[in-house]
Each structure stands twice: as C-alpha cells, then as structure tokens.
Image (cartoon, one colour):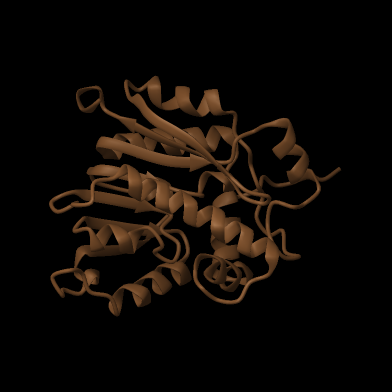
Length: 237
C-alpha cells in the first residue's frame, strides 16, 4: 500500500486563488454578476468588513495595520481612506495585483492617491514580518486545519502591538452538516478544503498569550458564517 503524501494546504490555497478561484472570488468580493449563493456569501463578507470598520476609529492617521489575506482589497482600501498605513498581503499574486489595481484609481479626502499609504506584498500569513499597531486577518483560517490555524494566530499576535482582529468558521453541528453536503463554497469547484474551528479553542489560543477579548460577534447567512473576534493588549482594554 502506498503512503499518501500529506496535503500542503498553503500550496493548495495558493494555486486555487491564482487559478480557477481567482475570477470566482474577485466577483464575490466585487460588484460583478453572481449567482444566488455567491450573492449570499458576498453579503456575509461585506457585513464582516463593515463590522470591523465599525470597531475601528474613523481617523486612523498614524496607525499601522497589517491586513493579512487582503484578497482584492475590500478592507485594505477603506483602511487607507481613513489614513492608516497598511501592509496588505496575500498568498495569491493575482489577488494582490487586483487590490493594487483597485487602489490606483482612488483618492482619500485630501485628494491623495491611497496607494501611497499601502504596501502590497505577496506572502502567506506566516511570512508577515515586523510589528503593527493592529493586525487583521479575515476569512483566511477556514483554509487551514486547527493546529496550523492556531500556530498562525500565535504568529499574528506576535506582530501586533495593540490589537488583533480575526475571523474563523465556527465548528457546530449545523455548520459541520452544511459542510458535508458541499454547500460551503459556491460553484462546482471544491479546490480548497474548508476547516471549521471550535470557538473556545481559538479564543484560548490568544488569551493564553496574555491578550484580552474585547468584543466578538457571529456573522451568518445561508452560506456564509464567521465568528469575528477583537483582542487587545491588557493596557489597551
């Protein structure tokens, strides 16, 4: 019997979002024509973005933020509009190029092009270097198994000086059943695995490092579900 080689989740995600998944998710994250399932996922993702923006100050001048897994820039661009200095990274070259293209045509309230406030980087989550006031990671951990996801979170926490915001797909009986029938992702392609994570375990991963949970919320629709958590250092509580 041949031994099955282990799955390289990073390579699977990278190839998917540089290949068949790029157009699908660019449409979902953007304004292009989508089917009903994709429209539902788009609405859920937009609610996640809107919630994070509600949690953050309107004036982000002087604040450094790492948007890890930036996709097409749906969070990066509003952050730059508010004045933040953003490092936007994604494992997919195509996603980063799309985010760059979106930024090139936009100006902030001072009529300055917002791409001047953004450093784009093609890199996976664990390649984030440096320190930032706030680190944000949305809709990324679903692509990685529990132990890997927790390791990733620990790395992100080490790069944040004040605040860490991230989302994950919670593991519940209902969502586990939904995943089994293949309703998690739109379209016929199931090129990426979908990993659900127990909420208490994910929370403990960060609180064990001395962080405090400031707020959390569940965002869900028929085909999109996320647990969104906001952690701060004790002196920022």
